[in-house]
Image 1 (cartoon, rainbow, N blue to C red):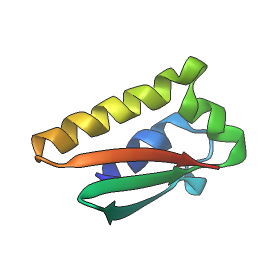
Image 2 (image 1 turned 180 degrees about the vertical axis):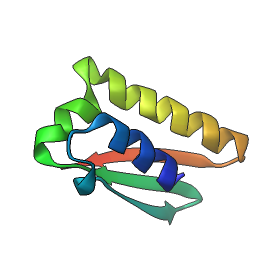
Image 3 (image 1 turned 135 degrees about the vertical axis):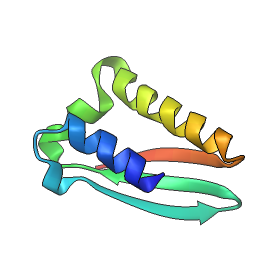
Length: 76
């Protein structure tokens, strides 16, 4: 799922070399932390958070299919 989030983020930003996603598990929940360049933060979050919500929806659909729970954190 980490690679899914990274590939979506790299397609959205101007500088894909600064896209970094890390994965950790906490109490059975997969937490994916996404960091991008400061200039690309607005592209990831989107207008009124719509892009971030869409990425979270895709992540939720994939994780539900695998009977898991996943959370996306966007880190500055």
